[in-house]
Image 1 (spheres, rainbow, N blue to C red):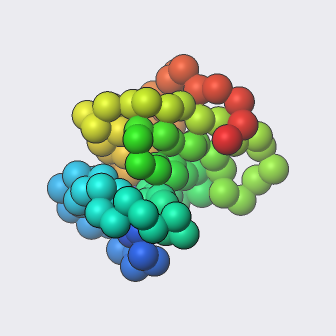
Image 2 (cartoon, rainbow, N blue to C red; image 1 turned 90 degrees about the vertical axis):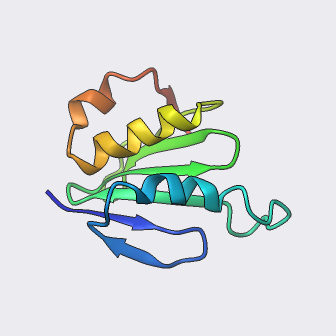
Length: 104
């Protein structure tokens, strides 16, 4: 399975080492006054993606379908990394079992 990561300022990588997830979260702690570049994301080849913003906010959606997005907020760094690892590995059932709330 393949996945992409998208950094806060637009750079992307295909199938990086899982250590990248911690680095992505670190990016969100820099330049907190920048309100334009507020998220990083991980997108699986199935088109399911996670978008993560400062403060532990994460949205989960299929970027190619009209399905309603879901979100959680206030998540710990460890939980966010776990979600990204599951998505990268294609463990979509694991992600579906999370306590998502409807919408953004």
